[in-house]
Length: 119
Image 1 (cartoon, helix red, strand yellow):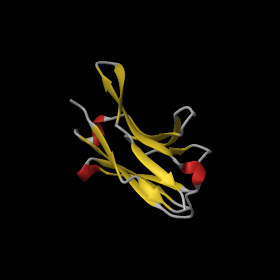
Image 2 (cartoon, rainbow, N blue to C red):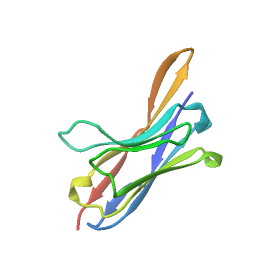
Image 3 (cartoon, one colour):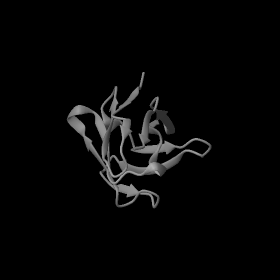
Image 4 (cartoon, helix red, strand yellow):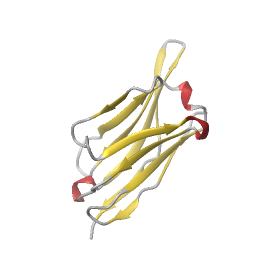
């Protein structure tokens, strides 16, 4: 069974940084793409960044310049480094992975990790 486990969230002051981790139960090379989403209260879940199996990275406008997605194949882990955090970054952050199984794309989600930016 495929599992994604996020960690690294917490309370951070405005201007601070956090690094989120997403560890997968199977090798990350099994996934077509892996990405980070966030969902603030009362808002839809939005994509922040994703990385393809081939290493192509795509950042979305909402966080570009302040975030970096990376991966460690040996640790089956994808990271999201976030800098210059502000209150608008307060949200639950989710890891997503998409895998092709018998020609069908299957999407997997982690349980989410809370990030709260507050002084």
